[in-house]
Image 1 (cartoon, rainbow, N blue to C red):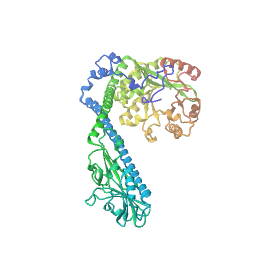
Image 2 (cartoon, rainbow, N blue to C red; image 1 turned 90 degrees about the horizontal axis):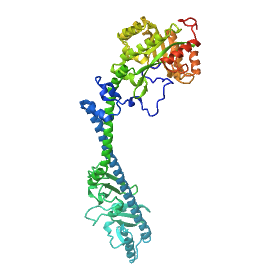
Image 3 (tube, one colour; image 1 turned 60 degrees about the vertical axis):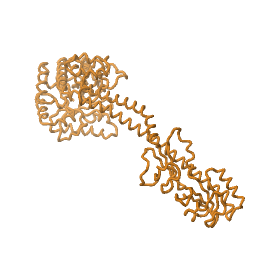
Image 4 (spheres, rainbow, N blue to C red; image 1 turned 180 degrees about the vertical axis):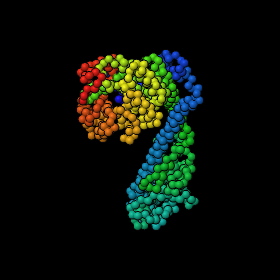
Length: 592
């Protein structure tokens, strides 16, 4: 059936595992001292010692490589957390300053619009000139609108109607000369000796020769800084089209000019430009502000980083202990007989007789209950313990075969044993002969099941020779999990095999539109061509059984026939099966 690497069905009679159980590898509470084979194995069961004490007393942290890995596991989350915290603080305050710049530009647009409205309301009625008393009204308008510093009408370069503070030279900017009718132009007076002070000129054409103008002092564009957070050292500037600072912090000169190096060295710099008028606002935070914001966030970032770093290094240390200690527990499990075998029957599909079974190893862990082979067999393979475990399985199977030898078994009755391909060396052959000769059990009663993937990974000539010698001794050879690898017909013909076992995931697709459903028929035909017996794994119901039989597949396994059974229950089940599906003569197969 399944290889060691796959989760196998548990015996339905076994106690249910509670939901509180964690995944197997995580549930192994390992005592690091258990990795030392000279230490009493009873220490492995002592779960009362806190894990941190086990790490400290194991001596693992005294190894330079382990210490370096744990230090890296501690430092990396800490540094990453601090970096992310710094980045988030920067991002947050940059967004804040961008919001400030955007609101200042909006305020500037509204200031210009109010000045334009005053021109339309107060000056459009007097394009030819205004009464002498009108200057006082203009003065009142200026007084009522603090953002406007002067109002007046210019005709052919002369001021003909003005608030008393208005000077003609303040209005002679090039942009005014070509104002279209009913359009508003905004311009900056040059910053030179011709003008007493820089100003923003808002102009609207009143007729062919007259232009209404309003002057706005640049400082009013930065007036609403009252909404800036209290205690902030925020700096802002009103910038002209060429980057000149007309109001605010002069260090921000040129901040709105593409390609021009910023004069500020601070991180939180935001630029906002009006889409309607030629004004830009630059906002930056003070260097001391940057440090203040970071210092406020540092305790939280440091606490989170330390927690993550400690957790990460702790988990790494636990993982290292696990990887070192599981082989020690496997050694202990062999000596304590903590393993047991469950048998999954194999049925001849044409007659219904039981023609064999597959031996499935289970670990009765003293602390964590029944454990499946996919939890520990890969570790046994990588740690060199797979051969002694395989020897124990073969010994147990030989004993159990001896116990049922008195039953009326078919001549080709056999027990399948999953064999790791790397164990197919010269050593496995004498071990197998010794075990079965000692129990006076024919080697034809055992079948070695080799996974397709494992056989592909270990296709060296010694493996081929071992398979050939085993078959000469009578051992049957099965290719397990067929269809999950990349074997082709020519490759299969290079090995001497007796059985092909179709992976249960393909059987589950029978009767569906899945592409895998068609593969089952192809594998069945391939088995006929190779003259080998095909076994279908994972037959779960009567419908699947009928579909499998329709493909002329000879044998099958699955819960439709029986769950995996411990030897005592399997022996009773086998006796009942033989009684209900007997052979024509003991030791002979019934005719199909």
